Figure 1 (tube, rainbow, N blue to C red):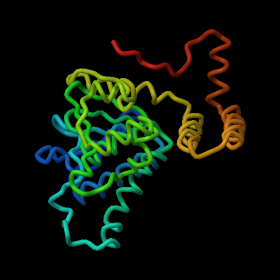
Figure 2: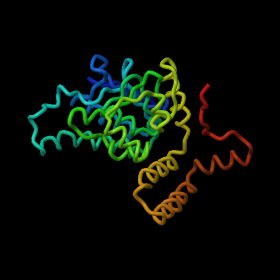
Figure 3: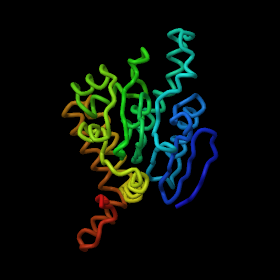
Figure 4: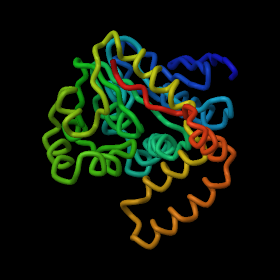
Length: 269
């Protein structure tokens, strides 16, 4: 698989062995999202989506924080009318949905703060690995704002209706252990294990069946707004596609020949 690095101003991007690693790179601002970083992040996501050599995406932050949210110093408080404010946030919404719709696994590695839009970004992931030092906070109401980056869609689907209201209305911080309990975090690891574990999982997920995974992810994304008949039809049609893939034929032969299957989950040590 191809290896490549792309130079950006506010993020780092490298694709190695089928894994694209996007790193938010404003350590001095706790990786707060300014306009430049936002644009570069969505460009990197699109690059990973369109690169056939990339099978899995990891998103992390430089230093000891994931992302402290939007850079308040660039928000021009009190200057924007409703239309200008909507236009300002629209690329963030579209970018978050591009992560949700990405037909490849997205792993987010969280250390330190995941505040505001940083929390929202974590909620777009398929897998979230976090440290004991991680802190999650939907801080929007503290600033007179509402959640963005698709959090009003992802939050209740992740934690449930009641906990979503608690987290949003209280704007309180929760630690990694509570985030694990709530289902926000998939695994909790030590700080030194964060990126190695994310890379271990990504390296395993490279061997997922790409068509079957994309079908599963798309169907799950729409399952809460669909009825039984629609989901049943989605399953039948999707399975028809999956049956026809070379991956299924090869894996089925391996299974019948009692050989190891190409994909297995790497259990934590």
